[in-house]
Image (cartoon, rainbow, N blue to C red; front, side, top):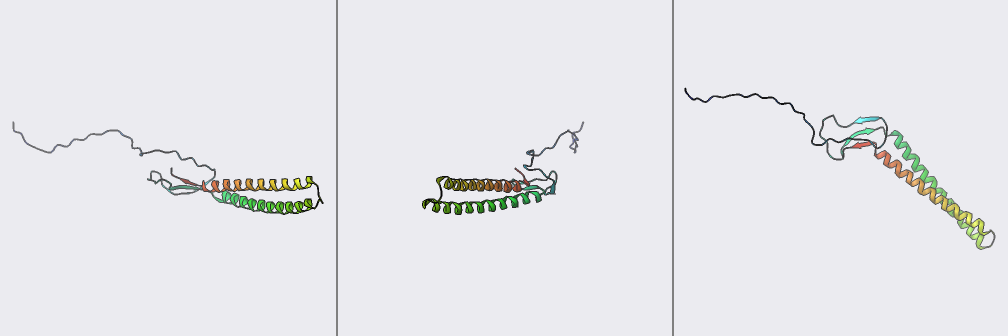
Length: 137
């Protein structure tokens, strides 16, 4: 028997599944129709990259409404301040009662509370608009 070297080819097959390094469920924080997909299935993405955009029109309108409500509330505060100043002057001259002055003070307190509420709604609307861009975690 003679020993010789020759190329031998082995062929083996295995079953396998290929998975990404990390699977993440993406759940948008606002509802709506997706108007734009920014990536393709299986594409590698970076942290913070925009994946899709939800229809922004209703959220932009809500923000504009909230901003208008803040402006209106600011005007109410100014009106209440002017009214309180006038009532204070009348009270100092003993023209009106303590009750009427208290009403003016309460009117200003209510106007200030409404302003804070309007500002909170504006913040909420601004956040909702930002949530229309679905980003990778």
